Image (cartoon, rainbow, N blue to C red):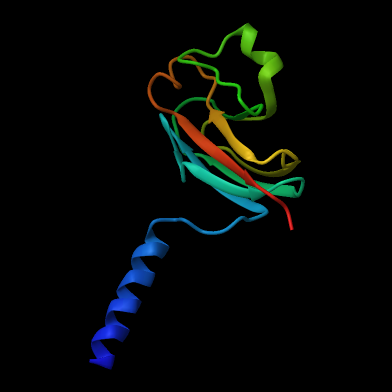
Length: 134
Protein backbone atom coordinates (compact mmCIF):
# COMPACT_ATOMS: atom_id res chain seq x y z
CA UNK A 1 0.00 0.00 0.00
CA UNK A 2 2.75 2.47 0.96
CA UNK A 3 4.67 1.55 -2.20
CA UNK A 4 1.58 2.30 -4.33
CA UNK A 5 1.13 5.69 -2.69
CA UNK A 6 4.82 6.45 -3.20
CA UNK A 7 4.60 5.55 -6.91
CA UNK A 8 1.51 7.73 -7.35
CA UNK A 9 3.25 10.68 -5.67
CA UNK A 10 6.31 10.25 -7.90
CA UNK A 11 4.12 10.07 -11.02
CA UNK A 12 2.18 13.20 -10.05
CA UNK A 13 5.43 15.07 -9.32
CA UNK A 14 6.85 14.12 -12.71
CA UNK A 15 3.64 15.17 -14.44
CA UNK A 16 3.63 18.57 -12.74
CA UNK A 17 7.29 19.10 -13.59
CA UNK A 18 6.58 18.27 -17.23
CA UNK A 19 3.86 20.92 -17.33
CA UNK A 20 6.45 23.63 -16.82
CA UNK A 21 4.59 25.34 -13.99
CA UNK A 22 7.77 26.30 -12.21
CA UNK A 23 7.97 29.23 -9.85
CA UNK A 24 9.31 32.65 -10.74
CA UNK A 25 12.84 32.92 -12.07
CA UNK A 26 15.25 35.70 -12.94
CA UNK A 27 16.67 33.70 -15.86
CA UNK A 28 14.80 33.18 -19.11
CA UNK A 29 16.04 30.81 -21.80
CA UNK A 30 14.08 31.05 -25.04
CA UNK A 31 14.46 29.52 -28.47
CA UNK A 32 12.77 31.34 -31.32
CA UNK A 33 11.81 29.28 -34.36
CA UNK A 34 9.58 30.09 -37.24
CA UNK A 35 6.25 31.00 -35.64
CA UNK A 36 6.88 29.93 -32.04
CA UNK A 37 8.75 30.55 -28.80
CA UNK A 38 10.06 27.64 -26.70
CA UNK A 39 8.81 27.85 -23.97
CA UNK A 40 5.75 30.02 -24.48
CA UNK A 41 5.34 31.23 -20.90
CA UNK A 42 7.80 32.86 -18.53
CA UNK A 43 7.19 33.58 -14.84
CA UNK A 44 9.32 36.33 -13.32
CA UNK A 45 9.33 38.29 -10.04
CA UNK A 46 8.25 41.93 -10.26
CA UNK A 47 10.99 44.55 -10.35
CA UNK A 48 13.92 42.12 -10.55
CA UNK A 49 16.65 42.16 -13.19
CA UNK A 50 15.89 39.34 -15.67
CA UNK A 51 18.68 37.64 -17.61
CA UNK A 52 17.55 36.56 -21.08
CA UNK A 53 19.40 33.96 -23.15
CA UNK A 54 17.96 33.68 -26.65
CA UNK A 55 18.65 31.73 -29.80
CA UNK A 56 17.02 32.23 -33.20
CA UNK A 57 16.77 28.81 -34.83
CA UNK A 58 14.45 30.17 -37.51
CA UNK A 59 15.09 31.24 -41.09
CA UNK A 60 14.19 34.94 -40.61
CA UNK A 61 14.65 37.76 -38.10
CA UNK A 62 12.67 37.22 -34.90
CA UNK A 63 11.82 39.56 -32.04
CA UNK A 64 11.03 39.08 -28.39
CA UNK A 65 8.73 42.03 -27.73
CA UNK A 66 7.15 42.45 -24.30
CA UNK A 67 4.09 44.67 -24.49
CA UNK A 68 3.08 46.91 -21.58
CA UNK A 69 0.53 45.56 -19.11
CA UNK A 70 -2.95 45.47 -20.64
CA UNK A 71 -1.66 46.17 -24.15
CA UNK A 72 -1.86 43.83 -27.10
CA UNK A 73 -0.53 44.19 -30.61
CA UNK A 74 -3.56 42.46 -32.08
CA UNK A 75 -3.07 40.34 -35.21
CA UNK A 76 -0.54 42.80 -36.75
CA UNK A 77 2.20 44.89 -35.12
CA UNK A 78 2.16 48.41 -36.58
CA UNK A 79 3.35 51.95 -35.80
CA UNK A 80 0.51 52.48 -33.29
CA UNK A 81 1.91 49.62 -31.18
CA UNK A 82 5.40 51.11 -30.71
CA UNK A 83 4.46 53.27 -27.66
CA UNK A 84 2.97 50.13 -26.03
CA UNK A 85 6.26 48.19 -26.06
CA UNK A 86 7.80 47.58 -22.63
CA UNK A 87 11.01 45.88 -23.84
CA UNK A 88 12.27 44.44 -27.12
CA UNK A 89 15.04 42.26 -28.52
CA UNK A 90 15.73 41.52 -32.21
CA UNK A 91 17.78 38.54 -33.33
CA UNK A 92 19.05 37.58 -36.77
CA UNK A 93 18.61 34.00 -38.11
CA UNK A 94 21.10 31.64 -36.47
CA UNK A 95 22.00 34.26 -33.87
CA UNK A 96 22.06 34.02 -30.10
CA UNK A 97 22.59 36.52 -27.33
CA UNK A 98 22.54 37.03 -23.59
CA UNK A 99 21.13 40.27 -22.23
CA UNK A 100 18.93 41.51 -19.40
CA UNK A 101 16.04 43.82 -18.61
CA UNK A 102 14.21 44.96 -15.49
CA UNK A 103 10.96 43.06 -14.99
CA UNK A 104 7.87 45.26 -14.79
CA UNK A 105 7.03 46.30 -11.24
CA UNK A 106 3.31 45.66 -11.69
CA UNK A 107 2.25 41.99 -11.44
CA UNK A 108 0.10 40.65 -14.27
CA UNK A 109 0.21 38.91 -17.63
CA UNK A 110 2.17 40.66 -20.37
CA UNK A 111 1.89 39.72 -24.03
CA UNK A 112 5.11 38.70 -25.81
CA UNK A 113 5.09 38.86 -29.61
CA UNK A 114 7.31 38.69 -32.65
CA UNK A 115 6.85 41.85 -34.68
CA UNK A 116 8.07 40.30 -37.96
CA UNK A 117 5.23 40.62 -40.46
CA UNK A 118 2.78 37.72 -40.29
CA UNK A 119 4.26 36.12 -37.18
CA UNK A 120 1.62 37.19 -34.65
CA UNK A 121 -1.15 35.93 -36.94
CA UNK A 122 0.80 32.68 -37.33
CA UNK A 123 0.85 32.18 -33.56
CA UNK A 124 4.27 33.52 -32.54
CA UNK A 125 3.07 34.82 -29.19
CA UNK A 126 3.98 34.03 -25.60
CA UNK A 127 3.18 35.25 -22.11
CA UNK A 128 5.35 36.94 -19.49
CA UNK A 129 3.72 36.42 -16.10
CA UNK A 130 4.95 38.88 -13.49
CA UNK A 131 4.30 37.84 -9.90
CA UNK A 132 4.87 39.89 -6.74
CA UNK A 133 8.57 40.12 -5.86
CA UNK A 134 10.12 38.74 -2.72
